[in-house]
Length: 312
Image (cartoon, rainbow, N blue to C red; front, side):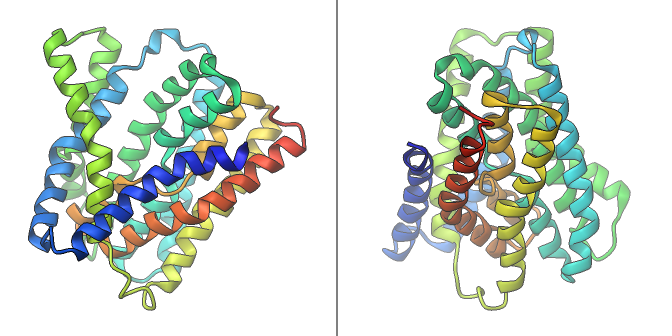
């Protein structure tokens, strides 16, 4: 069941990437079109997706404060650690931000709810949705900071701050939080429109990723690829899950934390890297390879937690 659950979550993602790759090689999409579509996803669809996810979250029902605070604190510590460590092992700035983003930004939104509901039923969807509402804005903000910080040869702090403030992803997240905390509701017709457009974001981002990613630079990217994949799928979950268990998280809460720590790199990592002058080719390769290998590593992590009785 564990392997099947991971496969059912991962296969649709990989199939859409493969479709994009096939469409590109059939000559149905040009490089110019892919760049333009990627820009559209970054500036419109992803901000609406983030807004939609947060807008749907009912923060008034929060009961697991310990879980949410631990998730936030662990993400902040992880981000700060890799912002310090990655420049020590990677010399090129446009690769540094991409690596920090890939390691610290998991595909939690696609793994948290499916994993929790498969293992614990529909009653777990509520806390999973709250985790999405807290985790997704934070990892998006961290990604913007990392990519903006390493955008130039030397950090220009006023420019970094301005880049963060005007970033469409951040604006979408802040508007979602504003609506969620004030209780403001869009008119029904507008709400439905936003939700339907937001639903387009991930499939389109995956297809564009598949059409854009190339493997010609794998030899030169081998070192950062190994660093990114190993840290995303092995080091981060090993440290994160150990800390979670020692603190006392079990069952559905531990599964959600496992999804946050052990999921592959987020699909939108590629889109943001391309739009913010990061190494988009490396970002795409990290998404593809972490997605493929996570089928094995997720099976290992879930099986291990079950074997030791931490999740049942």
